[in-house]
Image (cartoon, rainbow, N blue to C red; front, side, top):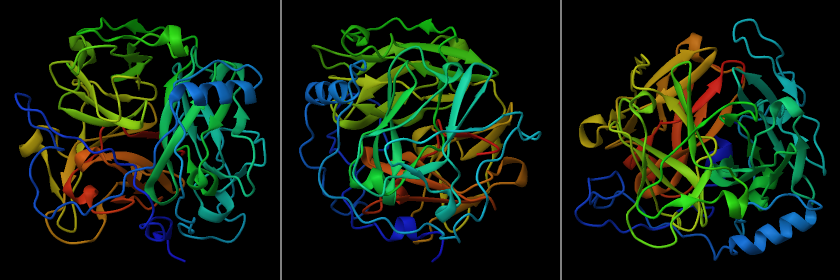
Length: 423
């Protein structure tokens, strides 16, 4: 079976799409222009349990673990299909201490019946690494039989200071929640899709010992730390890369702007990112002037900044050569040309694109110096805020797609996607 079947076998699945209606008097976004015929109807997710109910259940199951603002996606998911099926054991597990990357990978010990998907899909054993005060995750896993959602415990050196909740890629381009406690306990809010296949590729966050700077919140937005122990909204700049953290909510008001980043922590172009919110996923927009907006997916009730990182404006990038009719969306949205940079052994992608005509999902090929060791599947922001996905192979081939419809062709953002070279 070819490498695309993890996507193609699940296109009829439920898409993680929450409809958004634009408001007047606000800068144009990729989710607002009229695109006649561009987006096929997509079924929204079934009603999602309130965050509070899930927190109680998770805390009880984890024996008193700290509460989080996570919600669980309910309803059926498409069956898992092999993404480039390989003979069991081929590709050989986790690369360790690769000199080319400067990142030492350590395999996670899996719990609750969770198993590595490396032998089947060459997407890596679930692993962790710490470099420069930043924790990186990689690999993939599945749970053949229903069981507890805790899948591993991170060692002390790789634990966050606060509870984290962020979206990760699951089977067929869908998404579910990854939850990490300061105790190192790691959970997947496992619907059928997550149990069939979950990717940890592209996940990173500051370690507990890493200092961050608090963001000054605006327009009635406030920290959610006291309610969910996710930390106050903050940022850190290291090695030309900006890292966000914490969570927030807006008890009243409608202004989506919640903070302004200082000059040293601003991107060169406008960023559109998928983040975890009270209704599963929502949108984070960051402008070159530092203005930060949170919207869609009930962002006012809860928005997590965990796992968000991007190159600062002063970091040089290399433009990707686009293929198969894919075009940059820079002129329409100011989001930058599709590009990459490698710093400190970590690859960072940026920019945005669309495909006015055609169906070939391959949009570029990375040069050897920026290619991963395994197949990576990472969630992305696409047109109308739908959650899409990016596939990157060890040969550098890059595909953009989404679980249903063609939102990825309408607009795909590469902002805030990163991975160590040995991933």
